[in-house]
Length: 72
Image: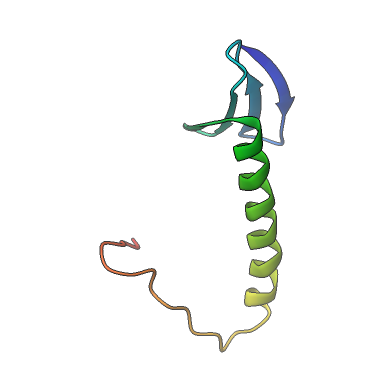
């Protein structure tokens, strides 16, 4: 496996001989096809952008993701 991109701190992106991308953040590794990784990265980018606006709005009420979801 070839280390393609080393991010700040805990993040890394590796290219496997099979052509899949392995995104590692700390102890978690996610395995993607190239198109899947691109969609994942774009979604995380949008969520990061949206989270900046939520912090600026102290009266925002968040909704629980649904049954079976656990927080803390």
